[in-house]
Length: 320
Image (cartoon, rainbow, N blue to C red; front, side):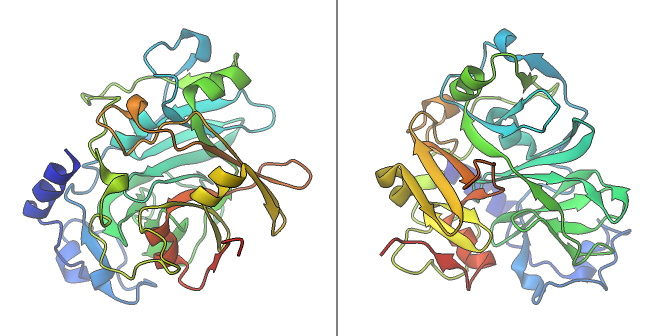
């Protein structure tokens, strides 16, 4: 299925080079004179145009106990803010929408997921005294989603949480602690928690349009260098800052304490990018990252190729 999608997107012009003169008709309010992109050819179309992948705003929620459609091992993105009821954002929905604009405990947040990089990040939407609302450009850079904000029409790199084109170039979103775990794990920890309700869109929620992707030979629409140390480009790594721990090392160890963080691995979470039904994917486990005081630490669980692309001088924590 994934490879049929790849071919379709290529036919639709996924390899079109990004040049300001080419994009201006679609983005007349974006200031292309301001950018930190060294080479416009790094940005290409992923197929859908602006808002072709519809971001969500003002999502509805159900008590966890009332949700029966989600399979136990399906992954959810968890947001826990002091004073607010914990919330789960199912990947079955984010696969098709990629961004959810929400407010949790008075904090405006953007919950984001880039399937092509397996990058699940939650950001504070407050930047330079403004509250921004994010959408999906339909563009990719190093196979990672390029977001935009509706207030200034600036473009943002999802993996970095950083403005890359337009008025907000160089601005940074504050990444908030969050993680992916299985629906069963969330429900067991938070029986009184909330889960995002199914959006009112005609999408085959629960299906994975990228079936087989995380075992493919190469990433989709990525032409950069392979990761070092013989690491597979589509191997998952836990990124904390500019450091990356291979998931396989964590799976074997179960717990690693180094560089000021404690990282644990536990079985029970399905890959969202394996089988056609998300809940049937192979078990890739759940990662938690905390500091030595037990507080959750902002991190990402990203594919190795994307870490290398955005942090080419990053540290690979191989334990050798």
